[in-house]
Image (cartoon, rainbow, N blue to C red; front, side, top):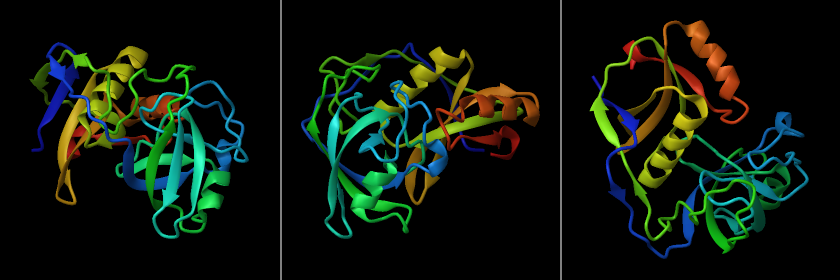
Length: 228
């Protein structure tokens, strides 16, 4: 049985500051159904604007995104959170994806480089980014226990980067007032940590909660603990 840990914040974790400002991974883009939807910073998503979602970069940050396949690049402004899909590092507006010429491919291998940290207004994280650049004194307190959840939960996303993991877990606990479990697993030879919310007694209750969080976490899905 894969181990699972219940995360709360009472164990000190210190993350060292580094200077890297680039990140490589896969980019995706918003589906048409999100046109006009409210993004995490309160703006309406418009496919014609050069914007993007990132897990932790402050809102207002501008990044240069370069398509590794063809060398095309675009500068976008962060105004939303996501994508919460393993391996994806940025979710671009449709017009930005068009400039990078990967509309038909759906996803692309990209390099993301911060070009302007912006003012961080609109609720973004005060720490610069997930490129291991964090507050000089960034501590988290954790209480870690083995747990054996039953019933159903809703998986929000999976991560390899510890800073992303603890930030999102902290936000989820505060926002939804529910248990947050961490499932440790191996994907393609790499250890990843899946964040799962709730311990629902039946699938209907889990589905109702999934509908509640889908707007903010569109890739959320239901898991049955007994079958993990």
